[in-house]
Amino acid sequence: MSMLLFILILIALWQGFYYLAVDVFEICKSYTVPSPIGVGQRFVESLSDGTLLKATFNSLGRGIAGYAIAILIGVIVGLLIHHFKYLQKNLKPMLLGLQTLPSVCWVPFSILWFGLSTKAILFVVVMGATFSISISVDNAIKNVPPIYLKAALTMGAKKSQLYKDVILPACLPELVSGLKQGWSFAWRALMAGEVMTTSIGLGQTLITGRDLADINQVMLVMLVIVLVGILIDKCIFSAIEHRMLKKRGLLSE
Image (cartoon, rainbow, N blue to C red; front, side, top):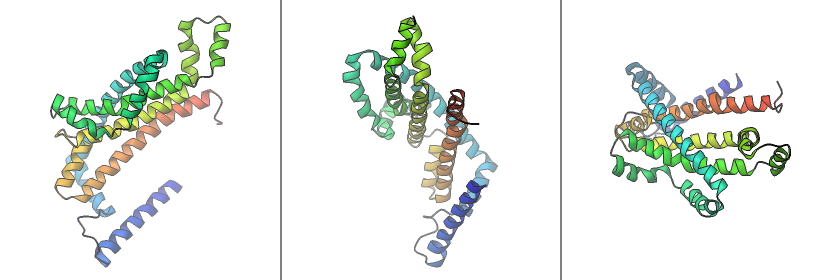
């Protein structure tokens, strides 16, 4: 209830700002400032013609597909970096540098290599998330206390059992946090890829609103992007973290 009240207060303040800036003092034009009423109207219209749902599901599908590929590549690269000192010394600094690149930097490559297609969008998503996941995997394994491995070996565990019975359970909380961060990178990269293509999605819908000077549509898409990101975090990653902590006795009922 408190969260709902907080949101209602924010909407009221937002509408009040619009009223003062546009209608009273006329310091802003109506087409440059979104309003809650205008965004609500665009929301109803977009739901009625199905464009918003179609764009959202298309974006989610691409985001999940690209994220899955990024996890596969990122985990393999992270394991290689952890096991080989040469890669740890030379490749990891490069990955740290590449991770700082905005995802939009990969868009020209994707268009030149794959054209204005879904493959181009997936490429941007993969490049946007893979480096973060690789680094997270390496750091998660590296932060496992060495005493755990020594104790397991002392008790007769084979090296092949270490990952399954010791390393994975010990590094799982940090690994999940890294995967959550990787999803945020993937979701942002997806928007960067979609705004540069003609494929139907939230990014393309956002650019359409800009081209039509429809600031309410732009704001609506931005809110949907944020809402989807929050729902994915709460329904998947936070649920996994909660279950993990509860199973380990680190969370009270």
